[in-house]
Length: 522
Image (cartoon, rainbow, N blue to C red; front, side, top):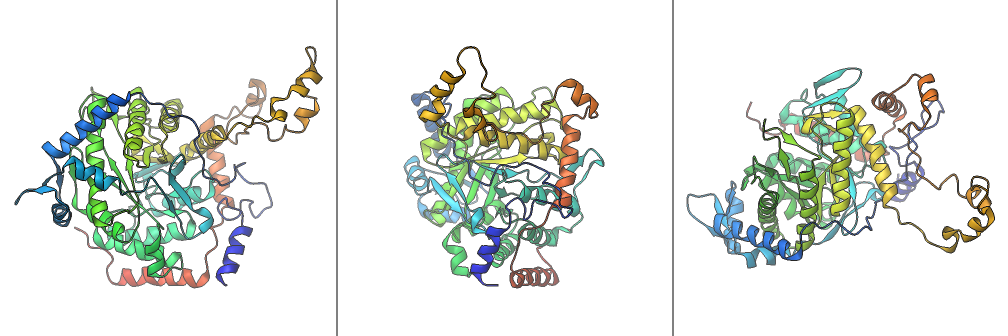
């Protein structure tokens, strides 16, 4: 099949996971919005006055100049020293002059595009664009039928199918649940093979060791049918690294981010600043630390390859001061995300945040904490929402039902973000004149012309009255979601892939397995 034929095939196949109608001829499990990259036209909420933004910036610069950041990677320290940062023999501490910081951060583009193996799934990160990523990295998963359990490859694949199926999920993030039944030495090979064959969306690579990162870059290159030069020429994938708050970047994440940077691939730098635990108890202090930790790694990456795409990630929330447990979707989380948006715009960087909650099951608490988290992202002007669907237990569990519930919320946010048309027909003076003061608008021509598309139609919410709802079994939201994910898995078909590429990818995985995969400590 030629590249032109492959493109034609991609256009022919419906975008919700390949084909969205099942083999029995029934309708799709979900009435979806079409694939699109939402654009947030709303003015962002800005809790801080300009002089307060400047004060947080000055505090972050003082941390970088006077306190420093620990870089637990000798190569990273050497790069920073060569750029003019202050290092000391026998120490991992690096201090940076604010002029250098601002010079290097200014090199990072404010907007960039990632083009995965299916170019129709290209995404723009930055500006007013807003993209959503599946839940990533929980060790456990759960559903109403089987309960909570340790992650395995079968469940991992299920969540990849959800990731591909839903048009409101734009990027294939980290492992949506950790498949612990695959040995760590080869887990990245099997996982990326599954991700690259079950999805065609922008893929993520964990920065967890040199061999893993190099393997994943090569697999993404093969899956895209790319030469090495074509892969290096434009972003095709991405990584997310977390600082080890407070004030520390570890070896493998720095190594992975630098390797991707050398080949022009983006990194999202996300400090894990929980106020009262790994950051000051005050929001201003926690955000100040978030800025210092995030910018320090972005400076490094700009030293490695000037102009390489980077984003800064906000994960600033608070803890339960009685137990130390992380809390999400709180008033403090909302404000911290909004302030982080102000700081990201101050530096001209795209911003990542998360749809996080601390609930232990897909209940009302999960819904309101996620709603607050997502609303904070909209209000802050966030560009990338991690863990947008499926997150439970503060990130310890991926829920099948919560994934579906979150996608309903994401679709509603996407519908909310659409511009409101205000043409003469939309203002509808003639329709108001026609109906007058004694009629209704149900039957007028203006309504008949628009009734099918006038409003968002949910696929999960039940808008029937109590009697009808009760007559149909009084099925609550989580159980409705349970039925939907089962239909999705029954009808799912993977996106097309050229057979020669599929064989080359499989051969690479098998060869690397024979060679032992990645080294481990056990």
